[in-house]
Amino acid sequence: MTNPIEVLSSALRQASGDLATVAEETDGTLASFQAQIESLGNCWGDDELGMAIGIIYQGALGLVMNGLTSNLDAIDKYIERLMMAADNYDEADLAAVTRLTQIQSGQRPNIPL
Image (cartoon, rainbow, N blue to C red; front, side):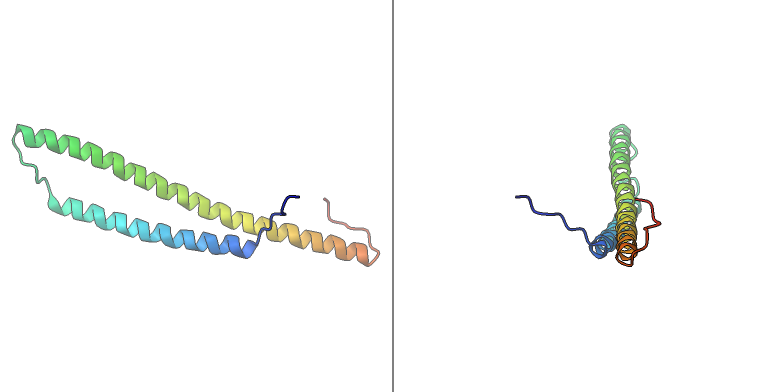
């Protein structure tokens, strides 16, 4: 026999809040890291080799920063979806309670299934 799945909207909201906290901390750490990197300036020199290293470094740093920013944007979307799911579960529960109450009182449920 399979075990039923239980979804608690409060747990979804808690997970959303926890994830938001982690995203904010990560965003702060990323901003601090970027400020540190920028404070170093062009430390690779201005000769031909230094310029080549600088170009490669800036390109790689750009890719890394874009990837991390993209991941944080995706996490923000998950946060929103967790809250939407919690709201949807609450609405479905309320609708079910309303229907059952109407049925118990002998009324015809007026909420569409």
